[in-house]
Image (cartoon, rainbow, N blue to C red; front, side, top):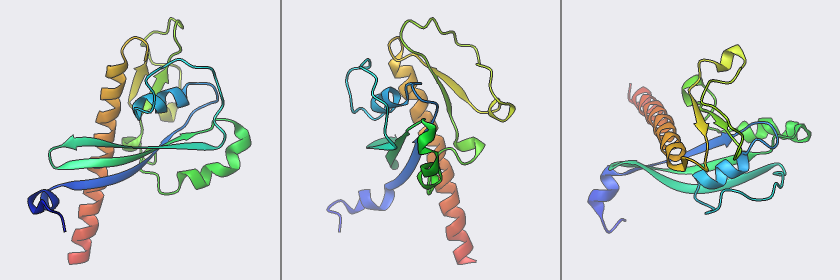
Length: 168
């Protein structure tokens, strides 16, 4: 029993599994480390992810909710393609359009703009942010936390629907 009964009654903790996917050498690991606060430095020597790297952290949406995030930094090399279905199991981010966020991650000094890159038609309707960590890192973090809030709202709504279906 919680020593703070008021807190335990009104505070919900949601757990979510978010996949960070993309081609090799696009900066997924740098972005994952930054978003999970596992590193202070942004630049480092390239070392490809082997399979998947799972980063766990907590984030807070509002006064009544928090979320425990598993950020799965997935290798982009096609030699791991046979593992991708297993990685997607129980993922909360990336299954429906409302659960997706495209991040155009730019390397330092790339001179990248903020225009929408050419994408497959099914990706053009998804929200897109530009990640330029060396210039405006907190903007990227803020957009990612908004995204987590959207996923959390969907999870909460789905949970409420399931609970209501059990009652009726």
